[in-house]
Amino acid sequence: MYFSNNLKTLRKDKSWTQVQFAERVGIKRSLVGAYEEGRAEPKIDMLILIAQTLSVSLDQLLSDPISEAKSNQTDETRNKGSKLRVLTVAIDKASGKERISVVPVKAAAGYLGGYGDLDFIEALPQFSLPLPEFSQESTRRVFQIQGDSMLPVLPGSYVIASYVQNWQHVKSGELYVFLTQDQGVVFKRGYNHVAESSDFELVSDNLMYEPYRIHSDEVLEVWRVEGVIQLDLTKQATGDIAVLNRLDALQHEVRSLRVELGKHVA
Image 1 (cartoon, rainbow, N blue to C red):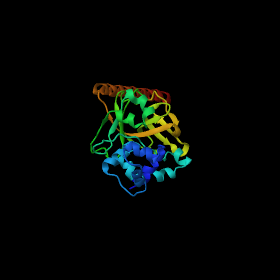
Image 2 (image 1 turned 135 degrees about the vertical axis):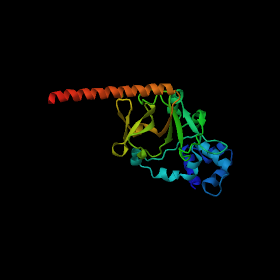
Image 3 (image 1 turned 120 degrees about the vertical axis):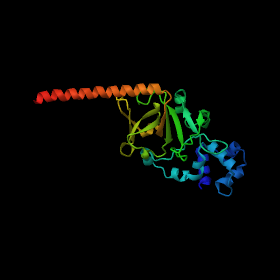
């Protein structure tokens, strides 16, 4: 268990003294020192409170060697996307388990400025998703999509996504939500060039939109899309028909070109 070292590292990251942290969680400074030196262990309710105060999940606080990962960071690991990122999550106070936060379109602009703010994250709609297809070990978030760049996923749909800690694990061609400094929440197919050129190529499924690249320094979060929630099935059916019509038109054009080429060859 990495609790002692993680507590000390995360407290210092927030520039809090032991006295300041003790006041925030309602204990004596001497007890904070005992926790950090491994001379005492908090009870579960205190662990939950400490995790919430430090804006990490209970699992991160106890199981991830945060201090070791941070001390080993170099400019190269930052550029290659493997640096440690402490994610702000909402935690159920009764169970200590993470909740899934929902980022609707109306909150997307605020998410860019508040993604690291515990108060902002806790104010978002939250729910649990106990489905066997979704591992309960992953941290998830739901984002509402706007625009038509990723048709047939329609504007207003919600995508369920799991947090990607190490950007080297981004698989080219799969769907991701990127939080970027300039554009905020972006839903695209990601192509991973972090190891070679420290950037991602973002590609829309709608061919009317041009692909573009973004440097890893401009990316704040990466989430791998695992599912889509679409509420208006009528629009989906209409969209599917439109896609099929476009394919039929393209096939007709190809057949016509073949006929013309055949005439010239003959």
